[in-house]
Image (cartoon, rainbow, N blue to C red; front, side):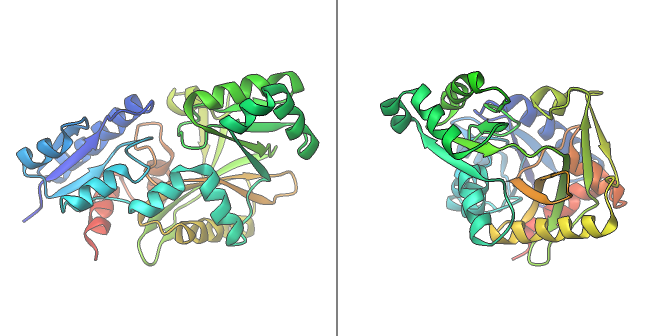
Length: 312
């Protein structure tokens, strides 16, 4: 008999609206599969809701803080409810882009050069002095990120020196630490990985936007970005990227599914930007597109993710 599934969605992060769309898509797929399921908008009463509904398996459709960072995963483990995707540690590591980059560097996996700047230290120096320190160690253009946010929230692309201070200010609205990363100019490629002990990379996707930047608007507005499958690179390059994606997946201890984002420079060298342990499942999302290219329609993809969650 199929376990009753709770689609955990919404939540309290800035990515709430995207999570609701992901959750709705997952719920509809479960209905097509004939699986007993209920949507749960995650709030402070989430434990009570799970118990009231008799949830036996949680499908995590949450994005951002409290959903991808290990918090909900730890809560579910405490109350004995299995869930989809990665565990507490892998979720926490992948959610923090700085921690991810440190792990990638330790494993010898390529990632753009970066600096981390804590807000308190920057306040002591002053934002302008901090900017000068960055310029002494890195060259323009740069990318400044809020390291624990997703969906490009709190991100700035810095092409002029005058823009760095405002970029830091934006990052500090969301996090106590800012990630300053060397901008890689080239192709944007994403690799969707599916599995547990023997994960595999699905067909790669090249992302091309009408705006030139794959930001929040381009990600979630139909028509502002194109997903090119296969990407316009050699098969050899594709295999290299797939291998790096699986290695990154394993390095962080991921399970179930994850999406690994890359930039390729003009020489074709791949650099890992980040790992997303709960990738979007909306109509414009990348992971479902990669699965379809592999011949896996959306309901079957959801079914596979559920089965991976129940593997010991």
